[in-house]
Amino acid sequence: MSRKVGIIGVGNVGSTLAYTLASKNICDEIVLKDIRENILEAMSLDVSQAASAASSKTKVSGVVKACEFKDCDIVVITAGIPRKPGMSRDDLLLTNAKIMQAVVNETIEYNSNAIILIVSNPLDAMVYTALKTSSHPKEKIIGMAGILDSSRMAHFISKKLDISSDEIETSVMGGHGDTMVPLSNFTKVQGKNLSEFLSEDEILDIMEKTRNGGAQIVKALGNGSAYYAPAYSTSLMVEAILNDTKETYPCAVLLNGEYGYENIVAGVPIVLGKNGCEEIIELDLNDEQKEQFKNSIDSVLELTSTLDQKFF
Image 1: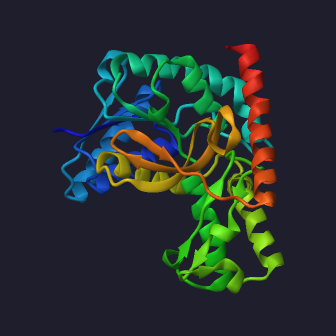
Image 2: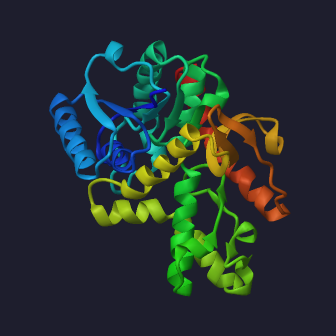
Image 3: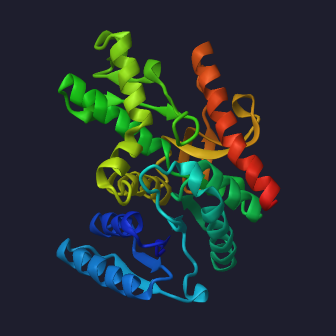
């Protein structure tokens, strides 16, 4: 059976994701959609030629009409305006929520069985918008954030200890923003607790760098935001779903009682498979982490309350 992935928005993240999926031969077909027809044409050609260079069998095409963007197994939404210097993810809220509403309604009409992966910021609020806008099953609307945030934490540990990232296991919970919760006590280095390698102050410094990892890139670029790491992180989710690997990844999903919260989107560890979010894993958080997670939930609630007032 043909495995088809659709990507809406072929800016830096969307086009890099398409390139990653095509070059790794993860799926049979990739269909791209964007309102900028010249960019759509260029990226379709460029990624197709990259696939040829990689001897990949993945077919890549671009479409303009909604009715041509159909029958996808997975749809990745990266559409929205990007974050600029001095702009928080929260500043993007209302503009990107309007875009998300339009995109989700149109997408589900022609892709009723698709699992929808959302990358647009502010991430948790955009997942909430997609869920409230549609009647799509909650396990099939998932936000990409925790994998990215965890990779940033692993990067900073790797630099500090001068070891390879593949010897490090990390996890980050909560909203995708300044209130995210890096879980140092669930972090392993060469199979051992992080505290065996770093002092408490060093761990706190890495946690703070993790929270500001995206903003650091935005500041350095001056115009734009990260795209290689977000795109690759999203490709891992696509791969887990298409291959039904049951990987455990931190992702943004709707909580209905888990961790004691209802009707709120937050990043938590989940099992990813062919049905999307197949299980939410509840970690045994300590009191400090519970408080930090509550603060993160509260920051997401501020955004979703605004959305409820404006749209729902």
